[in-house]
Structure formats: structure tokens, C-alpha cells
Image (cartoon, rainbow, N blue to C red):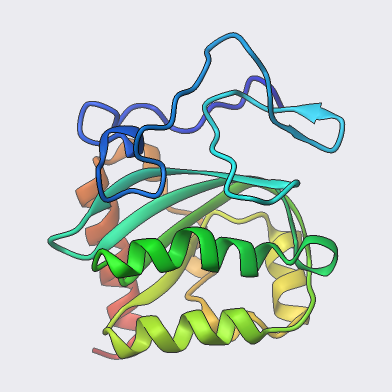
Length: 191
């Protein structure tokens, strides 16, 4: 896992460390020192720790004018043991929402497992973005992770599956990823 870097090809357009409105403004990363791990597997030092011991992320793009951000995730999403959704919601999502973000694109191809607990924070997040005409879309999550989310009945809070799970997002600029995802979301919502 140490060689899986967060997507870097948009860094000429956006870096969370240089964005004064980002929860990660001013963060510094080593290119050589591996300080984070998921269990006994070290991960690339460019990933950001938001308070979970098994799930890390990178805000790879944010557009405050259009009110969206793209977040890439790595690790194990574990609500059962670590309440990762609460930590994510309180430490990152609420800060981004305070800056006008209401549309969230979560990239999960490097989320290896999901363990559920209750749905309180998912429901809260969904209601808050819905009130702001926003949404939460999941891109390229692994089929078994989506199945676990569906079994836990939290899939109702996300837009997921279908074309969202096959989007070759790395071939686009971030604005085009948003446009593509928004188009899929609007079709699903019947808008």
C-alpha cells in the first residue's frame, strides 16, 4: 500500500495544503518518511490523517464557487470499531460545508473494506447536503464494499453504482469529473 499515492495530476490546479479554506491548509508531507499505516501496512506519506486509524483521505480538488469537492480515500472504512463516519463528518465534512461545499464526490477504489454501525451520521450528512441542494456521490468503490454498504442500508444516503462505478475519472480534468457526475446525479434525481 505504500506505493499508492493520492491522485497528483491536478496539483497544478489545486492543493489542499495551499487552500486557506481547506481543513488541511498548511499541512506538510514528507516524500520519504512513512508515518501513517492501516493496521500493519504503511501508506504513502501524501495521504492525510483526519483522525481515523484505518481510513485516510486526500481532498484532491475543491471549487467553492460551484460548491463541490472531490475526495479520494484509502484504507478500511470502519464505523463499527472506529466510528469513521463520525470522525469524517465532524473533522472534515462540516468544515467543508461551512465553506459552502454541498456536493461531495468520494473516490473509493482504494477503500478495501467497510464495516457498518448505525446510520446516524450518514442521515445527518444527507439531510444537511439535501437542504443545501447538494448530494454525495461515490465513485469506483469496490463491489464488495458497495454490497456491505447496501446490507447496512446506508446506500440510501449516497448516489452510487452504475455509471458512477465505472467512470474513468483520471482521464478528465476535475471540472469535467464534476460535470459528468452532476449529469448522472441529475438524471437519477429526475431533475
